[in-house]
Amino acid sequence: MAGHKGYGLSLLIETLSGILSGAAVTWGIRSWAHDDATLHTLHGAAFLAIDVKCIAPPEEFARKVETLIDEIHNAPRAEGVERLLVPGELEWERHDRAMKEGISLPADVVDSLKVAADLVGLNQLALID
Image 1 (tube, rainbow, N blue to C red):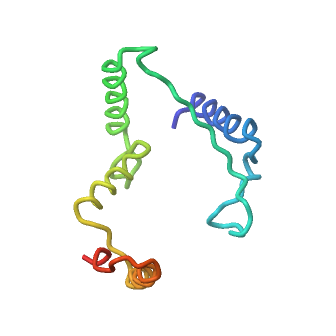
Image 2 (cartoon, rainbow, N blue to C red; image 1 turned 180 degrees about the vertical axis):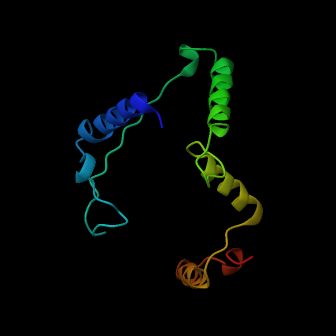
Image 3 (cartoon, rainbow, N blue to C red; image 1 turned 45 degrees about the horizontal axis):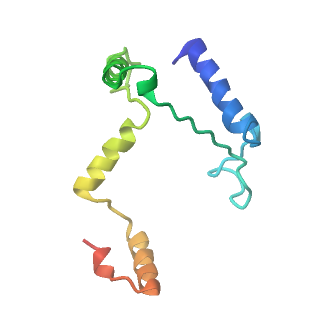
C-alpha cells in the first residue's frame, strides 16, 4: 500500500516494539490464536506521543488528515472490494452500532455471564435486556 514508506515504517515499528523493547521480532513472535496459549507470545510494544501543535497548527493538521482519509476512501478498489477503510474505522463503526443496538451474545455466553454474576452477587437483570 505505501511502497518504500510503508516498508520503512514497518521496519521502524519492528525495531522500536521488538528489538528496543527486548521482545521477539518477525517469525519469533508467537500467535495468541494459533500457537500454544500457555506460552508467552513474546510481543513487544512501543508508544509514541507527539504534540502536534509544536509542529503545525492543529486545525491544519486535522484538515490534512481528513484529506488523506478522503483520498484513501476514494482510491481505486480491486474488483469485489466495496470500500476502503483506514485503521480503526471499522472498530468505531462497530462501537457506534453496539452503543445504539447493543451486542448480541450467544446463549452459552449469556449463561456463563449469569453464573459469573451469581458468583459475585451482581443483579442478573442488568445483563439481560
